[in-house]
Length: 165
Image (cartoon, rainbow, N blue to C red):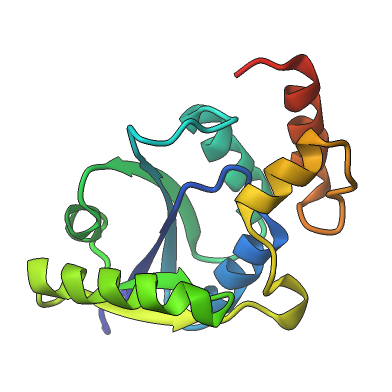
């Protein structure tokens, strides 16, 4: 029996966007199992807590075969090992993403030689979408509905109106 090929798709996912979901769907056709994993970074101040983001990801990924959701703290290479992954999935929206992602892929390979990185470009309609942009548009009352799943849209707008974290 062939070994299961697992990939990890790490990110902050604050909020999860249609672009993230597009990458998950496309990656799920390449690997047997995808672990969408929230990396917890002490330097970031997310709008949603880790448990909330885990719930969001579980909700929107539930219909995609082979996708599980988790979180990790610390080095991505350690998470790759802990989740039993053979590859890291990274989305590239634009050329500006490439240099940073390329450096990270090389560093991950230096730290863990068996760590491969697979770059996927999102569908063109999501190539400009980022969680940072979505949060800014929502903060100023703009329509984010084309860029995030409906459940996330409502929750982000509510959270920003409350002004709570």
